[in-house]
Image (cartoon, rainbow, N blue to C red):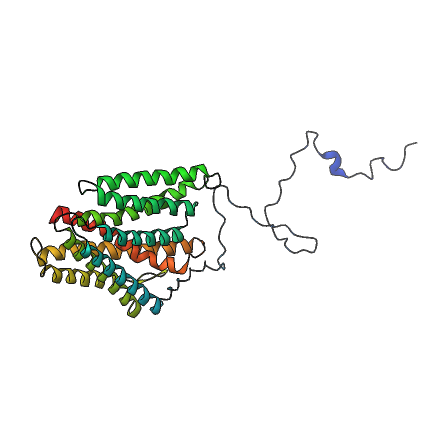
Length: 346
C-alpha cells in the first residue's frame, strides 16, 4: 500500500523549483545612513583630514589676537639735563686744552686727552662688557698712552703711527682672550667690542696730531665747539620735548637731534667769522656741520645699542657708565671727522 501523503508535502515548492547553479554575489552594502536598534540614525565619526590639504577651519573659531603696541620708555628730564651738562663740560675741557697747546708744548693737551680716553675706556667696557673685561680695559689704556706718545713725538704729523698702534692693540686684545680658556668660547662676540674700544681711544689721539697741523687748533675749536653744542642742545630738547619718538624703546626724540645739529652748525659759522684765514663763515659752517652730525648720530646710536641689550635680556650696566657712553662716543667720532675736514677742505 502507498502512504496517503507524499513525503514532499511539508517542503516549500520554490525550494525545489530554484534552478541549480552557483550562488549569486552577496548583496551590496547600503549607502544610506545607518540606523541603530532604536530606529534612529547613527551619527558618523569624525572626518579625517584630506590628503595633501589643510583641515577645514570651523566657522565659529575666533580670529587670532593682534599684538599690543609697545609703550614708549619714559624720558627722565633730570637725567637728560645731567648728560647735557656732562657733554658741555667735556667739550669745554677739550677746546681749552687745545688752546693751551703750542709748538713744542703739547704735553698738557696730551694729558687732558689721556684723561678723556680713560673715561672712554671705563664707560665703554662697563657698558659693553667684553668677556675679559679687565684685560680689554688694561690693553685699551695702554693703547691710549701709546697713541698719545706717538702723536706727540712722531717726526711727521700723520695718522700712520696711530694706525700701527691701533692694530697692535687689537691683536693683543684678541690674543689675550684666546689664551684664557674661559673666554675662548666668546672670543667671536668680543672681536667687535675690542675693536670698537681700541679704535675709540685712538680716535681721541687724532686731536693731538691735528694740533700740529697749520690751522689745526682753530679746526679743533670750531669742530669740538659745534659737537659740544649739538650734544648739549639735543639732550636739553629731549628733556623738554622728546618728540617725535624715534623708537619706543629709545628715550630720544628727532627734534633734539635735528635742532642740535642746526644750532651747532650756526655756532661754528659764528666762530668762523672771528677766525683768521683760511677760515670763513661758510667753511667753518661746513666743517662744523660734519662734526656736529657725527657727534649726535654717535650719541643716538649708543641709545639704540643700550635698548637692544636690554631687549635681549642682558642685565643693565653701571648707571654712570651707561650715560657717559653717549657724549664720549660723540666726541670720539667727531675728532677724526675734524681731522679729515681740516686736511681735505682747509
